Length: 189
Image (cartoon, rainbow, N blue to C red):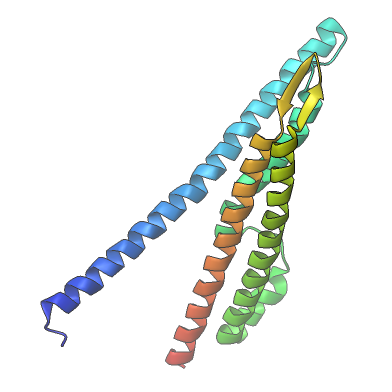
């Protein structure tokens, strides 16, 4: 059975497809983080322009505060999946690191539980964002002052939704990986 070339080719193709899918996923997660970083630069530029306008004209530019608030939220959610993948979320590492060293299998299972709960919570946030997006799109919700300057809110909401959905899937992938790690540790002990 092992010498069957068709069996080996099928296994190799599946492995290559998995590696390719992982690469595409990583690129998507990294692209969202890059977009968030670009938005940080644009937000800084907007703030600087607003400061110059306040000092030279005595008044703020229209939309700057509203645009800044939505942009900050967008940046957080666009970069959330990268934060999860890099294991940079704030949590009690003092307990978990020691626990994983002492009990590797239980530590992996606890990590999987944490990640599964994270996927569920972020998934619920994404689900609620769908409703907000639908309402904003249907009603033509906007920020700003009519007659002076307005921007529709739905493009911001769709990027927030995208960031939440990708972060939820990233949590789910980490949970599966931790469970696999737990199974491997069980086999080696």
